[in-house]
Length: 117
Image: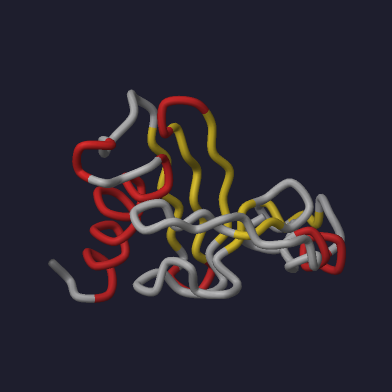
């Protein structure tokens, strides 16, 4: 998906198909209370196409599961982040599922690439 369907020099999925599934499909955006910046959806992928995570490039997309398990790809940074584990961020901190990921994984991950920290 990061390379538009190309794997090791072979085209497994046509680039146009990848572009379509990673395009915002016009579904209503989810509620976004403070501390839980939930992304919009493509076809089976969560998208940052409207910059719900301001520090993360707009072309970022990913999948997520229970306990804040996540796969995030950012083509412009040639970056893939994978996380397995328990939930990060707590209600006491004012962080929901996506807020914990943004605060403790996405922002620091992107900062380490962009700022070289």
